[in-house]
Image 1 (cartoon, helix red, strand yellow):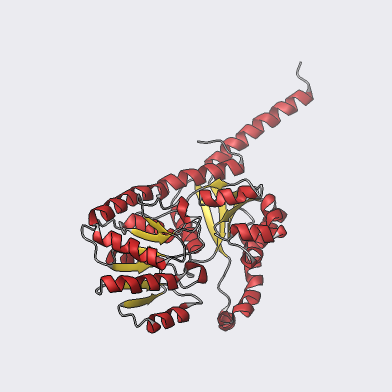
Image 2 (cartoon, helix red, strand yellow):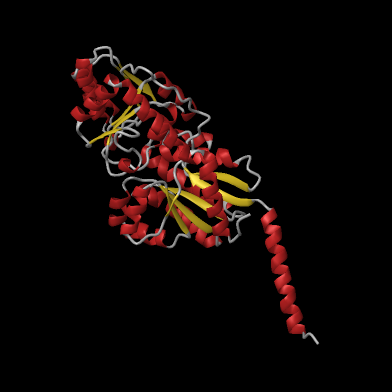
Amino acid sequence: MKTAASMSSRWRIVDSKQRTVQRRTEQMRVAIVAASPRWIGGQGVQADLLVRHWLNDPEFAVQFIPIDPLMPVWLRWIQRIPVMRTIARAPFYLAALWNGTKDVDVIHIFSASYSSFLLAPAPAWLIARIRGKKTLFHYHSGEARDHLRRSTVARRILMHADQIVVPSQYLSNVFREFNLKVQVIPNVVDQSQFRYRPRQALVPRLVCTRGFHPYYSVDVVVRAFDLLKKTYPESRLCLVGKGPVERQIRDLVRTLELKDVEFAGPIAHSSIAQYYDQNDIFINASWLDNMPVSILEAFASGTPVATTAPEGIRYVVEHERTGLLCEPGDWRALAENVIRLVQDPEFALQIALNAHEESRRYQWGIVRTQWAHLYRKLIGLREI
């Protein structure tokens, strides 16, 4: 004869199984916390791509929570004042976090380093903990080693996250130095946005889409272009972006008396593909980097890559197979690599073809599988 206790236990098991089946038929609910797409930058681009790709996915219900929400019209004047806008935006951001994470299963937090980590990812993690939600840190900064070495707070917060994701093996190795376990899921390139164009004969038209920040060393790009001009006077350089050292770069162009340098300004990511298509060589001179989306976009476009090789880029570009590398700061070697591409179009075409094949690793169908598996794992669902 079955006891009341055994009957109760059996019903609990059945009820648990029913709930599991029901949960599998529902959409998994994810909140992505990141910079809004109105700001140009790698993290904003990646967050926007993830959100747009999940929108029509029947398995996931994804909402976006910007770390930089629009403030009321009467307060938007303050957005022109850097420190004040951060202070004024904080209560709106915290309110959006609290309201937007109520009914989600996973909070997917994009993360940079230093003060940015404390201002945006840390509050998202704290609210997730209060609400009892699963947390996923999506860490992108190439400054990770220095940041983690300096910040005990960041290390402790990351240690208590349910999952850390990085886009490159380089960052995975850095996090391992601090005994932090991570999963590598690469950045996404929207293959439908970029048109692969084989360059049968290269014209020395260069494009750099990195923006004017000190660690991107656009001054090295300009100096390499100055050397290129001496061999190919018809050379042209297009600089896409904005940033704090733009004035210094413009001054350098004037000092070198360079012609044919275009300052295209900040370009919406939806329009960036035409700049790869209109030019023949992608040039980059960063001294600190992780997995630049711009290089992956050049791969997808068939634009041969000549770049410096800080530690992170060596994991993305293979010298003489998917691009040409030189040491950071060496504008002479960078110019020589560009000249090599122009003078050997068959070699350049093969490099671009190899890079285009490599870019397929970053298409949504492949990356989606990895994210879906991780979300299910965090929620406790089996694979379908």
